[in-house]
Amino acid sequence: MRLAHRAAAPLAAFLILAVSSPADAAQGTFTFRFTAGGHARVGALSNPADETCIDATASMGGSGRARAARNTTNRTATLYMSIDCQDDGVVLRPGASRAAEFKTVRFG
View 1 (cartoon, rainbow, N blue to C red):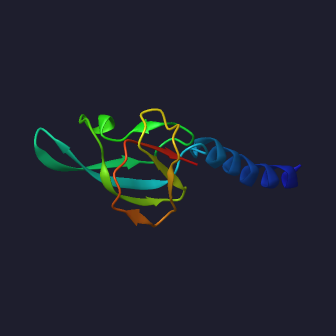
View 2 (view 1 turned 90 degrees about the vertical axis):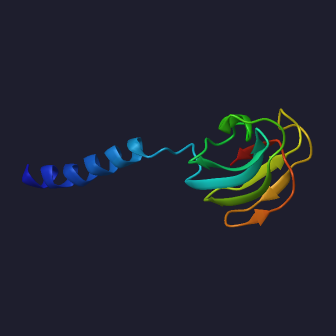
C-alpha cells in the first residue's frame, strides 16, 4: 500500500505540470518594428498561440506592415504579406531574424 502512494505522488506532479503547461503555444518572444502615429515602435508577442494568424501591428494597436522581425520562440514563425496568412509565407526559424516587411505571422 505504501509503495502505491510513493508511485502516485510523482505521477500526480507530472500530470499537474502537463496540464498547466501551454502545449499549443510557442514559448518565448517574437519582436518586430512598426510605425504608429508617425513614430517608430517595437512590438512583442509573448508565448504566441500556435496555428493562429496574428496581425502583428494590430496586436499592438497599430496598422500597416511590420518589419525587422526576430523570432526568439521555440517554434517556427511564418511571415505573410496578406491579412489572412494565405500567401506564400517566409519562414523564420527559432533564433533567426529578418528585415523584410510583413503583415501577419503564424507559429507552429
